[in-house]
Structures are given as C-alpha cells and as structure tokens.
Image 1 (cartoon, rainbow, N blue to C red):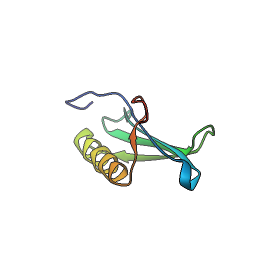
Image 2 (image 1 turned 90 degrees about the vertical axis):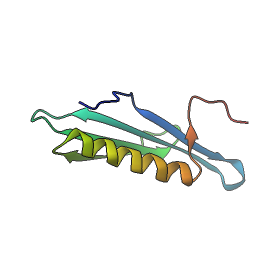
Image 3 (image 1 turned 135 degrees about the vertical axis):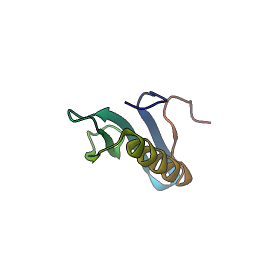
Image 4 (image 1 turned 60 degrees about the horizontal axis):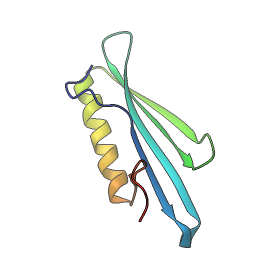
Length: 86
C-alpha cells in the first residue's frame, strides 16, 4: 500500500458556543486491482454521519489526497480526537 503505512486519522471539532460537535475520519484502504481508496466519514458526534470513497490508481495519489484533506480540516479547526480538549 503506502510507504508510511499509517492508521486512520480521527479528527474532531468541538465549539460549545456554536453548538458544534463534529468528527471527521480519514483512512486509506487498498483496492483489489492494486490501487487505493481514501475513505472519509464525517458528521455530528454521536451519529453515524456520512461516508464518501475516492478511488485512485496509485497509492501515492491516495496518500496525497489524504494529506490534502487532513491539512484542510486542521486549518478549519479540527484537532486529533484522542487528545483531551483544553
């Protein structure tokens, strides 16, 4: 699959002033034909949310897409879900 072989990225954004409690999960899975898929799952914490799958011919393309999405979400205020909120 990818050269860095990392697990899924779990992000969340919690802002009580806006009644906002959101999650965003990104993962890469190999396809049957040698490519890779970026799987996104997002929504309000406590729900199943929505999902989207993007398939790429090369695993490097999937890695790039995941990195781009992760940077975009972090700029919007999402943080690691496993880190306790301050």
